[in-house]
Image (tube, protein in one colour):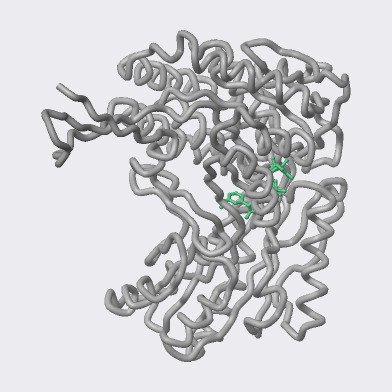
Length: 499
Ligand code: NAD
């Protein structure tokens, strides 16, 4: 691992946006301060310096935003044809294509992911918009046979569910917000988005850009503020029909509780502790970098990170030797440094948490093979740590059971495929996972045996909206991607017509 320094000139539009005194809420097409007048600050994780000040919204602001979203839902937006909604999504893709550099700079400064990584996410954002544009034209019910006496025709219709509350985490809001925005615009719903306070800026900026691109006032609103205030107000709001939530399992439980009053529909994408299984016959030239980046991408702050790397006992030494050599190729640096492959973690609290897991792992008897320290010198003011590897981990250790959400990889040996499947399944989570083997039958046996929402074979982390992904167990429910995703923004109405 080496460290790097930035040499980067900010894009003029990003600079202009970031120079605002306060980033207000975005409600009904307007920038409005929080009713309380309160503000919060966000910090640049690469330097520890305050980056921007933004409104701290609460119940009154959520009420205001939900009212705007309801008005838009029942207003002119509700009359847009699928053709018009598809054209809007296509136009948005063109605008975002042109504005992407500005957006990734805002995102890099706000949440710390390196621009090199963010630049690579453009293709997936464009795919998402193309996918949702196609879905706008793909909503249909059925005509059904029936046994009703008389001359009765029966059918089902699909209709948009209404106002969506979108609660977004900090680990990649620029892209992840489009799982909600895309489905909202394709289905004819409206939304109030509540980004995480650690990284709200790209969500606020996108809402403005969407408005400029032709999204009517009130269709996409943003209320920033603390989760326990603005987030909870949205989850409990009687006029919100559905919550799309991505975040921790603990917050997911609170959302479920808050949603009971008006029986909200929920989509919950929660935490994970995914197993990445390396069989003895794996192609290690691919499996080593694949498994490493399945953990260290985004500095380990990815829900489906394959942090439990299960390695067949006969190749543990060879795998470990190659992994440690790969670690030396990683470049940790400021998020605006084009040559950095890994950035900081999001904030001091997260850094302290991740470092505390290093102590926990050591105290539990795991062997720290690489990293484990906060980085100093030119990166000393930011929240940087060395990407870290533990060997000799057993599945009962806390580092193998709890989601660390930082750059920490654990190697767990296994004896045979049944053993690997049992270890993979011995987790409260069921989000991602992978198997590396040159035998298709071994790989399929593992795919079928592991109880998880998404499995990769000889690769890690691909997500395509035409294929989708999901979680099971305490990793949540509600499919993302495919027509199943769109279906959750619609409800089915049965119609009986006496002719
Ligand atoms: P978090 O649960 O702390 O926060 C997520 C969002 O919920 C934030 O906007 C936060 O403000 C809001 N929130 C907090 N308390 C709330 C409450 N009581 N009511 C309503 N909203 C509330 O999660 P985080 O720290 O921002 O993100 C990291 C977590 O998210 C990790 O556990 C990670 O695995 C998970 N995650 C999951 C996925 C997935 O697709 N499964 C993707 C990304 C992140």
